[in-house]
Image (cartoon, rainbow over all chains, first blue to last red; front, side, top):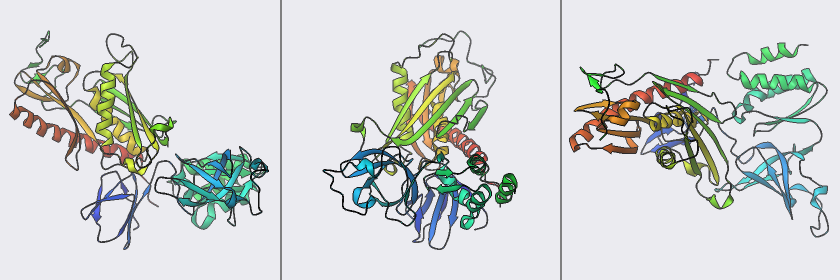
Length: 218
Length: 240
């Protein structure tokens, strides 16, 4: 579909015809939208991409979290969502740790920022994250900013074009979490933040990449 | 029944010059409260409501959490300056009742099973009251919820209908609210034809109720279109 149609809760979309539905509900054979968002209809899926709302954890998402609490054998992580995530010891540290003797704060302490991956979300929203991922790491220094989770895709751009541009032009290190948290480190981080916030505000404008390139200059 | 000091209908025109089946001027806007997840301001003539929606967010105290469904909380309040004589801002019997019925009217449309253990908080504030405040608050809350990205079956539209003398009227103002023979507040999901709130005060015959329900449905559909228009305008995406 080339046209981007906005649907509202309760908008009738079309007959289901055995397709998968995302952010929609079904009454009989009829599919209705559940949320305010952009409609995407294909041969095997009817989905609505939300335009607003909180981040809801999904398996496989790479997110940025903040260690909030230390338990006997793991950590509770704030992931900018209504639910906290749990980082078990086994998913965080490779070596054997004797939990009776070792204080877990020597691996991750309260307030530490981590880039991790969601490995499990149960039906009643128990969330588990893991550091056993190629990109997962603890982030030292830098600052984090929050944006609307549904605009993350725009910040990254097609095939990472937008974020690569900002990284190159400002020479900063940037990690983008799917939960809307962005971590930035570098001498010109103010410029990068300005660019990201502009993207968030003007996410709907076409030709945004050129505008940001101009804004960041040579 | 209290008697009004002036007649409520003269020559088929109501005290504010409207016809019996005419609604007041409706204004709607969304997203004015930047710190809230969703917000809306709706006014019907002189009645104006501002609604802020927060959430879904973690629910505390923890014993209120349910592992399979979420919770919706509604707080309805009238500003001290919203009425002629100062209103005590503390919650009273009336606002507790309205909080409860508006919660039920709105949560019928919300998929609470989509956010287990979490809560959606809705704060409704009436900044100016001139009759039909509860339905104005519901109209505002419904678009605030949609703009907060809360999963819903349908938008909820609401209106008030009533009877003055022998004439059935819609969208009552303050005077009519106080002195009419009967008034009825109705909220519904127009595209589904489901009623989520029905309250009545006064005396009506069965035929009158059926007629009023029909009128209310028409008005709700009108309001529903306005709600849709407001949301689509706010969230329109420019073509690539």
